[in-house]
Every structure is written in structure tokens, then in C-alpha cells.
Image (cartoon, rainbow over all chains, first blue to last red; front, side, top):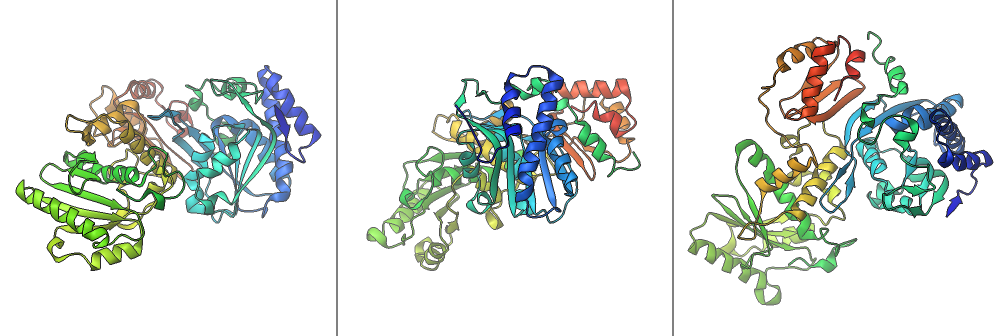
Length: 227
Length: 281
């Protein structure tokens, strides 16, 4: 059963309900980008500052959900550093999933006041946990916003339980819909309609790490003017 | 046995006991000596000897650990039980003509001070009091500092390790130890544990590589010409960076993915990072 975040906008609800039914790649990408904008509008009033913000995303989300959110915040005058991770998937001895980072794009940033961690869906929290851990202990941001169109019920608590209290209490969740059903293969129903890699057209779970987002390529030029 | 009541959180969940964390920590502390100097190590829990929570066989030396996470432990409590255990162990080690060390492991500063200051004279020189904190989850081992800091740099394939990289490392070791088979004497063998982690690719462990791969020397020369790009293979994995923004550690230099990468570099001859990026493994 699906429930909605208090205060979720009517347009946000429309988008998040259209998403799992959409099979056309271009339209799916467009919906994800629009959802990023909707989430950005919901997030903006909660930000502690317009500066010193770090947006953290995965390579598959960068050009769509993250781009929509980033552009919304930039339109509102925010200065945002981008961090993009390429996560692998590993299953340990008792079947515990882990998502080691095999590649990273990190724009230099000092004194991060807030992390904005955006992900197309949060269910096991494995990727999000890894990507928050990567820098949170060094940067010690005041707030960690975990932003997603769809959460699996209980994901917030599971994610917070993976961190020491002093870090977990900085978490704020910004979301639109919460589902409580998951198939045997781990897919949340209705969720976002299946494997986000294939729906976005960035490869399969095995090949998606070959995908380099245009957002990364274009922003990197500012740091490598000679290339 | 450690006092489990003193350990909070999920202390009763398999793998999250005080002893479990300490055993994994001991193996990780020793791993660089195994990887770099081929110094073996075996670990046994509940070894049925006087000091038996954890026993380490280091080849030429034996170490015996008793874990006491409760806040009231003394050498004299319960009719000098702890003292008797350590004296009995000392006697057995001398009888076997072992090079040995005895350790009592506590979780609190005041117990560390008390047991050290009141160490019975007959146990001095052979006994050490070690402080190891209570932990709630394996990943917390990645952030231990001081004498408990795990030497990640000497066992990881990566030169540049972040917090999450270190967490992945301890979680892989912890899971591997809990899943390890024991030898005929009930010991977990470090060499087998490292083999298991490598074979399952749970985490990227330092693995010497002699760079003997057809085409690699030409591909290497091509990569060295790319402005701003740096890379390393001496720890057995292809690690690279394009500072200040990009870095990666992906495939084993002994695997087919790396061979395919080398072939791509030879075929395409990338001259810039933009051209190389398409080819990276």
C-alpha cells in the first residue's frame, strides 16, 4: 500500500504515480528529472544555508533525478558542489548486501553545511549508507538530507540504525511516496517500476558502471580548464 | 567469558558479541604481517584452556586472551578467579615450553587502570591489560584510533581510502571470519580467510602483481602520456586518479576485465582523459 508524505505536492504525487507505469525511456527520464525539481522545491525551505551544500548522487541518477534537483536549487540561488559515486554490488557471507564505491567524482568543497543525498528509490539503504559514510565523518555537516521520490517502509529507521547516534540525528528525509510491499527479488511495488538502470537506459546492474553522466562531464570542465 | 549484559545494542545477535568484534580486530591487525611477510596466524575461540576466550597461534609464539567487558572485574573477585586462570595458563605454557603472552581485555578505562595497577607480581612481564571498546556494529572498527587503529593502508589494494572504504573492509573481514571453516584443531586460519575474501571479491586486498601481462608495457606507456592522469597497479588492482575531481579502483590486474581494458587502450590509443574515460574498466 502506498502512502504520501505530509505536504507532498499534487504534482509530486502525479509524477510518482506515473513513474512505475512508464516504459518509454525518454519519458521516464523526463519524469525523473521533474521529480528532482519537485523534491528540490520541497527541500529548499529546510536548507540551513544557500551555500556550502554538497549534492551526493549515483552515476545512474546524476543526469535525471539529481540534475532536476540541482537545477531547482541553483535557480533559487544555491551554490552546490556535486559528488557522484559509481557503486558496485557485493553479497557477503550471510547474504548482507554491500555497495562498495569503485569510482568517484568529487568537486572540492570546504565546510559543508549540508549533504543532500538523492537516490531514485531507497529500500535496503545499502547504497545510500555507503555514500553517506564516505564523507560524513570528515566533513561533519550540520544536516544530512536524504531525498528520494519513493521509500520502502522502514527504510528511514534502517538507515539511521547504521550510523552512530551523533550522525543519525542529523538526518532529515524528503520524500513523496512510501510503499510497504517488496517482491522476493527485492523490487519495491509499485516503487519506481523496476530496475532503474534499465528504465533509464544506462545499462544493466552489471554494466551500469560504464555509464558516465553528462552532468559529470560538463561540470568537470570547470576543474580541468586545459583538457 | 565477557559479561554480555554489559554490552548494549544488538549484543545477542550472532556476530555482534564483544568477542566477535575483538576476534575480527585481531585478525585484521595481523593481516599486514601475513600479506607482506608471509607470517601465518590461526585463531581459536573458547579453546578449553585456562585463558581461553581467544587463542592466537602465531607460529613461533602463542597469545591467550580473556575478555572481561564487565565494569567490576578485579584480579581478586570470585575468590581470585581471574588470577588463578592466568596462573594456570602460565603454568601450562611453561610446561609446553611455549613463547607466550597473556592478555586481559577490558572495555572501560577504569578497569584498564585498576587491573594494570593491581597486576599480581607473578603475572607481571607476561601479562598485558588491553582496552577494547564496546561496539554496536562491525563498521565501528573502521574508526578505532591509537593502538587499536587497524593498519588499512598495509592490507588494502587502494592507496586512497575513505571512511566507507574502511567500513567495507572490516565488514568483509568480519563476515568472512564468521563464515570461515575451522581446521582440524578448531582454528580459523588467516590465510584461508584472506583467500575466501579474495575469491569472493568481497573487498580489494593488497595482492602483489609482477606486471607480466602481454601488451601492458605499451598500454602503460600510453596511459603515462595522458596529461593529469595518474595510476598504480603495484597492489594488484588498477587504481587511478584525475585530480582534483576523479578517482577509481576497479578491477584486479589478474582478471579478464583488466586484460580487456589493456586491449582497448592499445586499440584506441587515448590521448586525453576524455578519450580514456570511455575505456576505463
